[in-house]
Length: 312
Ligand code: NAP
Image (tube, rainbow, N blue to C red; front, side, top):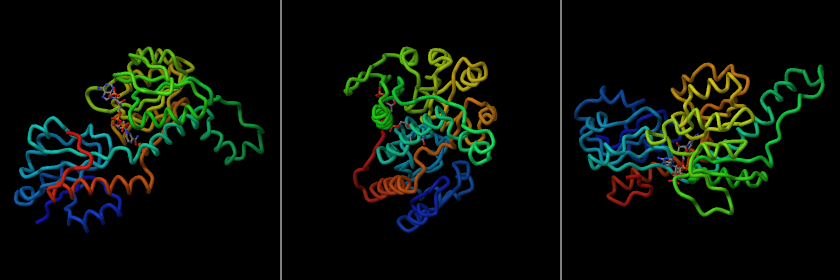
């Protein structure tokens, strides 16, 4: 009987590897645990987890032999780590291998939004270039004041990229970091007041819920651009939409939302919003590395070896 349960929507390559390496059993989501027999659940020692649906105490208690939850992704806010620790279950994630791709999407979003590249593409493709002439002038991004909320692994890659775009770099984290002269702000409102663009790269979960509050959004102001590649939970989305509708905030370029993929439909119609479907780490190359790291953690646990990227 299999010892590994793969939960979530896996790409074919990862599904093949999980089957080859561990003869994994696949289920679509945590709710599908209930459909497994008691004997099947009792044999599971490792969960390979992918997705953003909550995986908590109730799910863990259905798997009495579970020893590791190997998350596919660096952000593990869907997993109740406290509940896992209380049960002696290890949690692993996939840090670092995705930093470049997520940082690329953050900077790409800022450029796409400021330079109106989606509208400009439509202008050319729909014949308006030939009919009406030049595309309307847009917004310079290079050389602006950029704020990074959360100067961790991904935040630092974003800051490095924006520094190369000649931006002045400001950041907020819980403690001041070693930087090449970037300006530290001890709170997110002070950060937002000081910058033209605010890029959110902090962790998700309860501790950072709504850290981009109405006050932060107001401080960013009518010329400000908010970029979010962290999690939908980090932004007060109701306050964000109100500010976008009234013009209190200039614009938003977002890869993450509350209630993905059924996001608030107003994001599709607001003219000052650029939307991506949570695809920060979504390249063939990086997803292959994430899958490989997840499987190395599963193999380490089943083989009684140290886990590579332990969270708890
Ligand atoms: P990381 O290295 O752990 O950095 C996380 C940052 O969050 C740090 O600056 C940390 O601040 C800050 N932070 C943690 N807890 C906090 C709290 N309670 N209050 C305020 N700040 C807090 O993580 P990472 O690898 O850069 O990943 C960051 C996040 O990006 C992930 O957790 C995930 O949600 C998101 N992500 C999104 C995508 C996507 O596809 N859009 C892909 C990958 C990751 P300190 O320095 O003060 O500790």
